[in-house]
Amino acid sequence: MEELFGQLGKNINETKEVLRLYGNMSSATVLYVLERIMDKKPMPGEKGLMLSFGPGFSAQRILLQW
Image 1 (cartoon, helix red, strand yellow):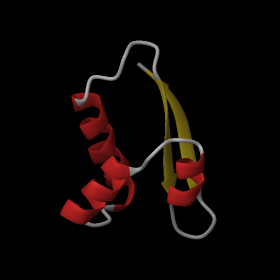
Image 2 (cartoon, rainbow, N blue to C red):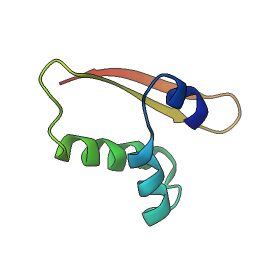
Image 3 (spheres, rainbow, N blue to C red):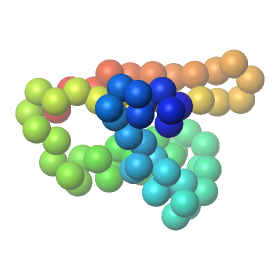
């Protein structure tokens, strides 16, 4: 994922920092990442993509807009 988003000029630094600090908390991890991003006050209209991968072949995704 890091390589893919890096090629698109994006980063997953907030995700990596949450995982470093707290480890993998399963589904709750994305909420901690979202909180860190919201603390940075995204610009109105800015978009983001939130992805979550679960056991097996499960994956959740949501398009965010501030």
